[in-house]
Image 1 (cartoon, rainbow, N blue to C red):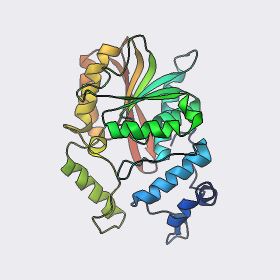
Image 2: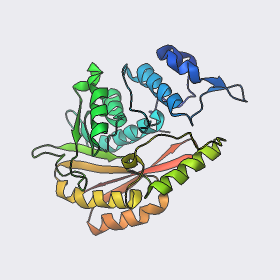
Image 3: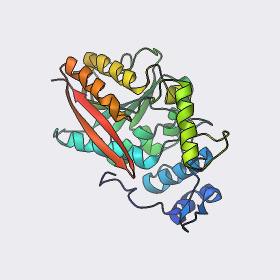
Image 4: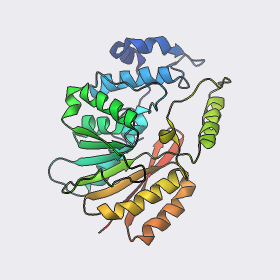
Length: 284
C-alpha cells in the first residue's frame, strides 16, 4: 500500500463504530480473536465505508442504491496517492483538475481526491441512475459540492467525447474499467470469491450493476477504446490513466500505445497479497 495511505493499519472498529453506530451490527471476533466484519455481505461493507468516510474524510452523508458497487476505500485511496506522485513530477501551478470515467453511484474517486488533496473533479457515467446517486452524494456534503461535478454520458459508444468541453483542461483522467467480458464471467468470479471466503450460499453477492462489472471485450478492449479516443483530447488532458487488473492484458495495451506514439508507464500497486497496476499515458 502507498506510504501516504492512512489505511496502513488494521481497522480501528472502536473508533469506526462511534462514527457510524450501525456498523456495530456487523462487527464480530474471528477465530483469531480479532474484530472484523464479513466482507461477503454488501450491507456490512456499506456500513464500514460510511464509517471510514465519516471518520477519516469528514464525509457525513454517503450512500448507494441497493445492489450497486460498494468499493473498498483503502484501495481506491491508493490510486489517488499514486496519481499525486505522477503529477508531482510536473511542477503544476494552481488547482489540480481531474476526470473520473465511470464514476458510479458511489463517486468514491472524486470524493477521495477532493478530501485528500483538494482537487477539483469531474465524474462521468453512462447510467442515469448512477449519475443521480453520485450527484446526491456530492450535494449531501457541503465540503464536496464546490470541488466535484457529475455529468451523464448519453452516448454509450463514447468515453471522453461530449464530457470534456471546449476550453476545458484536466491534469489527469482516471478509470476503473469493467473487469469482465460477460455476465457469465462476472458471476463465476463472484462465486470464486464467495468460495474463498467460505460462503456456500449463492444468495450473497458483492454488488454491482452490469455496466460496473462487465462490458463487451472486458477491461482490455475498454482500455484500448479509451486509448484510441484519448488521441482526440491530447491537448486537454495531461495524463490519461486506468487501472489494469489482469497483468496478462498489459502486452496488448502496450502495443496499442506504441502504435499511437504515446509515452506511457505502468505503476504497480499492492494491497495485502493483491497486486494491481495503473497504466498512464500521454502524448507530446
